Each structure stands twice: as structure tokens, then as C-alpha cells.
Amino acid sequence: MGIRVKILGSNSAAPAHRRHHTAQLINIEGKYYLMDCGEATQLQLKRYKIRAQRINNIFISHLHGDHYLGLMGLLSTMHLMGRSQKLNLYGPKGLSEIITMQLKYSQTVFNYEINFVEVDTTQSKVVHEDNFVQVTSIPLNHRIPCCGYLFAEKKKNRRIKKEVLPDDFTIRNIVRLKHGEDIFDDDGNLQYKNAALTLPARKSYSYAFCSDTKYDESIIPIIKGVDMLYHEATFLEEHADRAGSTYHSTAKEAATIAKKAEVGKLILGHFSVRYKELEPIRDEAQTVFENSELALEGEEFILDL
Ligand SMILES: [Zn+2]
Ligand SMILES: [Zn+2]
Image (cartoon, rainbow, N blue to C red; front, side, top):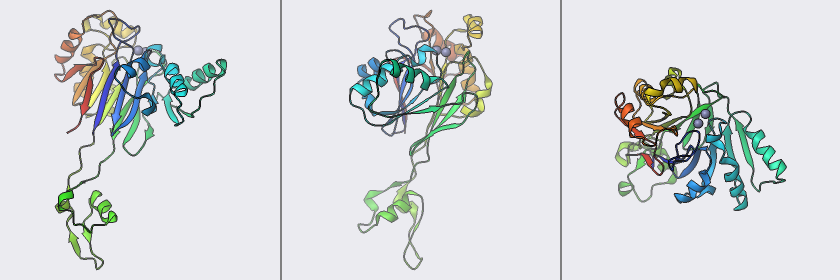
């Protein structure tokens, strides 16, 4: 399965040129993680036939509206559609207060529990962990507290060669094989070499989502060598002054980070409304880092063998 990243929106500030606000659906081994939730996210989920109720973890990078104003709508729809499953909501200080206040004045109590996890945007820390993935915060340099998130798949088990497995093989021994152990009989004699019955584990992938930020090399050690990096590229280099004053990056700056961090692939997003055509953003990045692509809505970026 690997990691699949579906772009639901990638525009900054205001929706424009048929582009929507930031949101991405990250699918890891069939588990759904929502990354940011700009306005229209629930409509975009519907458009791409993604079942919102399968999302159990939502990560918010910061509290500028283009990254979370779709959240209350999505949470409300989950409630109205009968959700009972607990939802983990990760975001900076203030997010739980905003949601709680809206519930208070609409006199609504959700059917399901929201587990608010306040993320310290000033430090890189593990914020979420499950059987498949570890998620670590990435402090970013923006006008208000903001962080990115690094999704790193956990080490995978070796794969069993079913066709050569003896019929009487116990579940316990299969687990041993998956963990790379050889199989011994009761007297301690080697019965099967692990390599004879298994194939190597599939590669574990990593994906870093770097939301709004000005050029800042301090993130490089955290994202070093990731298979795929999303980095905002709000502006072209010709508007570098504007990028600096608004704490955003240019395409060239995003590509420089990708190059210095030696990532596998760069995805560019958070496009300014001033650009109708986006190819110049990709072209500018490619002058520095060849494997750069645009985060176009509906595109799915797949990390898998
Ligand atoms: Zn933004
Ligand atoms: Zn912002």
C-alpha cells in the first residue's frame, strides 16, 4: 500500500481559478489521515468519493482560515451522519476553544468524542503513533504559530512466501518469520532458515507536509531524506519581497529546501491567487530541483513499490 496523498485543495488566501483551500487526504495502509481542512474540504471529499467517516485523525497546521475553516462543517456532518467513532484532532493552541465555542452557541453535543491534542508548534515532537505510522511535528516560520507534520511509516514485517510454507506451520511460527527469526524445533535444532520462507519487508516511506512558512533551513534536519516533501510555494521569485513580508516562500526557495534536504520528490502548493497559470511555479522550482510537481486538485501522489 505505501503512502498515498490525494490533493483536495492547494490555494492560498482565497479560493480562485477553480482552486480550493488547503486540504490533503493521506492514506496509509487503508487508514485515512486528513491534513488541513480549508473551506470546501467536505465538498472536495464528496467530489472524489472519499468517505469522510473513515477519517479518524485530523491534523491542522495553523489557524489561518485557509487551513481550517472547513473543519466545523466537516465535524458537524460527521455528527449528522451518525458518527460514533472517536476522532483525534491535532492542532495549535486555540483550536479546541474555537470548536467548543461553536458547539456551545449552537447548543450541539456531538454523538462522538473529539480527542483534542494541542501541538506545540515550536518543537519537533511525536504527536501521533499507531500500528502503521509515526507523525512528528515540524516547527515552521510563519506569522502565527504554525507547524508541518512528518508521516513516517513504521518498519514493516517480512513477507511470508505462502507457496513454500509447510501445511502444519503454526501461527506462532508465522509471527516469528514475519519478525525475521529462524525457526527451531523443541530441541533447539534449526528447522527453517527465515530467508527460505520469507521475502524482504516492503520499504517504509515517509512524507513531510510543510505548510505556510518563509524560507527556513532549520527544518532540513527534520525532513532530511524523506521520500516526498510538500512545501508551500506561494510566490514566484519575482515576488520574493512579498513572500518575505508575508512569511511565505517562493518556488525557488521550496526547491532549495528540497535539494538541501535530499528528498525524493517535491510537491509545490499554496498558490497565490495572483497566478492563474501554475506552470511557471513548477518550472522555477525545476531549475533547482528537477523532481518537482504541482499539487493540483484531484492528483494522487503514490509512494509504493
Ligand atoms: Zn495559508
Ligand atoms: Zn498562513
